[in-house]
Amino acid sequence: MEKKILVTGGLGFIGSHTVVELQNEGFEVIIIDNLSNSTIDVLEKITSITNIKPTFFNLDLKDKKEVHDFFNQNEVDGIIHFAASKAVGESILKPLDYYENNIYSLVNLLQETTQRNLNNFIFSSSCTVYGQTDELPITENAPIKPAESPYGNTKKINEEIIADAVKAHGLKAISLRYFNPIGAHSSAKIGELPLGIPQNLIPFITQTAAGIRQELSVFGDDYPTVDGTAVRDYIHVVDLAKAHIAALNRLLKNQQKNNYEVFNVGTGKGSSVLEVIKQFEKVSQTKLNYKIVGRREGDITATYADTTLANNELNWKAELTLEEALLSAWNWQKTLK
Ligand code: UD1
Figure 1 (spheres, rainbow, N blue to C red):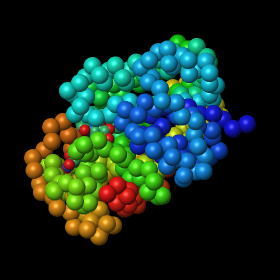
Figure 2: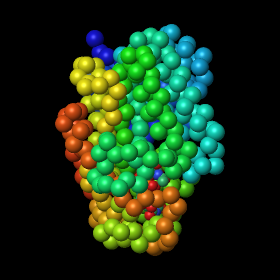
Figure 3: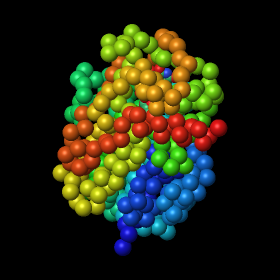
Figure 4: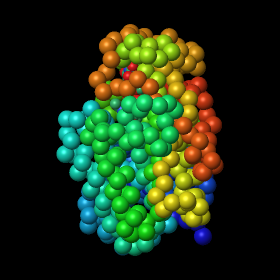
């Protein structure tokens, strides 16, 4: 029998790529998404990649009754919880909306999960919980710092909620702390769809190259790094999607060392903003219009993952290169024009 996996936020950027990989691995997928930051045509795109249409529910996880009714009518073997608001700047302007959405959604899901002894839960966390660390690369033992934004705080609080639910209710859970997810599926049928002006580097780069934005601002060249620009660990979204399959199999096969585990998901390699720009120019064979401006408030100097734990325990490793990720992002951008 195929295992049935619920993917919340399954029409979003990381969710949609994970649905494709789950289907490729023979899982049956049920998606819950409220279309707050995604569009229904992603469902058709997923179907056209895999030739399998996932079951879809347009449902708001903040609504306790809707969540309860869903679980009364559907049995699942595991849950991958992506659905959340994720714009850092917006979270500073509307903190209560972020707490309401990101925290109620998780609590409502866990109430049902624990009452029904549904044990396998994967949470979409972020390296943002580490803040500016003193030591690089970052291991899972690095201290958790006070969050820089309400968005970051929801990730931190949600991890704590899961840890408490695991202790009290015998839930089994894994949080994956993503570094910077970028890129798109090789089919160029699914990818990142930023609303309005992109805040993240890669969509801003591809939109600038496509002529939608005039110029990319590079935020700061006076950081203590190789070339003065900030360093991040950019991971291809397809590699990231595969990390979820590895985590899910660990839960389903009862291979956990603890009922609650946390893994960094990155490449282990840091790249500066200027290195990313250079690589992008090379793979896209376009010249990018950019200028150096002042630092962006809240940005940290450098972050990249120590991925030893995920490599050894999940038997997972990022395989795609920065070049491949940037090329896929560019191919995706070209379909949007
Ligand atoms: C941001 C979020 C983080 C989230 C992640 C993934 C913040 C403070 N953090 O990380 O919580 O998990 O996105 O979505 O927003 N840059 C430019 N010009 C631009 C845009 C970015 O130079 O127009 C630089 C930034 O200064 C940074 C790097 O590019 O050094 C990456 O930025 P971005 O893609 O926004 O990701 P993070 O800030 O690392």
